[in-house]
Length: 354
Image (cartoon, rainbow, N blue to C red; front, side):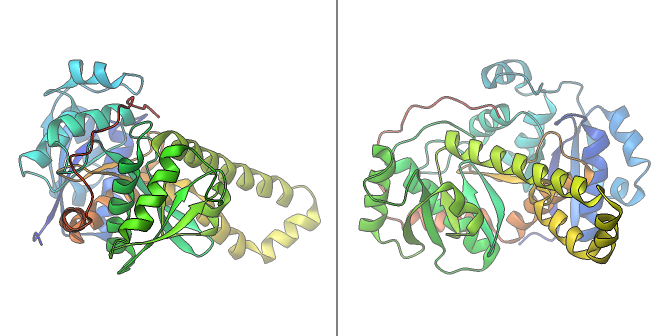
């Protein structure tokens, strides 16, 4: 374990860049004082924010670049224009060089996945990255992946996702054998696309010691906590994520409107204020912010692009925990004993920008 956790930050990533990245990292620093930061981006903008956070300034080093990856750039464009000079690339490269233990960016998802894959390379037996996040459920938390790093995938890819997601769940939740479900349109074995049914057969036949396959899970099963790990290919996983975030905001607005409609409801809200605050916190997407890009020979965390400072702090927290709990070693150990065939031909896929 390192004495300090060194975190590289893409200070120009996201909708507003340094004005959220620096205050967010400062919040995380109060929770994890054994953290050091490398901030990549426009020095003038970063220094202006650091001046407001003396403790953060003391724990940081700024590396200047005025090149930023746009939220609208295609992955191929980002690689051509931003490779070796953008704040996103330099943050990832710091992990490759051993200057940082983890990189955190709120930038373009597709560009981040493409750059991370190109710079850090994939772990043996893994052909492409996946986004995995902690998902609050009725029975605690689950790990859900892939949330949109790439689109499509064959049965072997889904099995690899199951193994990596189980490694993350075992690290975060202290589980020896996390339960794993495959997201599908029904729980019956005859339902779903061929690759999903084949992945189910593989997981049952392999009977991996590090995970317990529990079958298909429908969309509503994610929120119920039907399994510790929910596996989906990136297209359906990203739709599930965005639908859940939108529903959470919708419920929050419904509650706010209902509680302010009459004087009786306003009085009732005063008596139930703490309960409503607890519910609001549970539904707040920013408090589950921070997706880990799994499958890389290094640790990269993706934050929501439109998050606030508190939300970005949670993404930095996730990066810190992945280093402290040695996620990369755990994934390597599980991949090396899972019995899968690394020589299986990789599926073709499009890069996804969410």
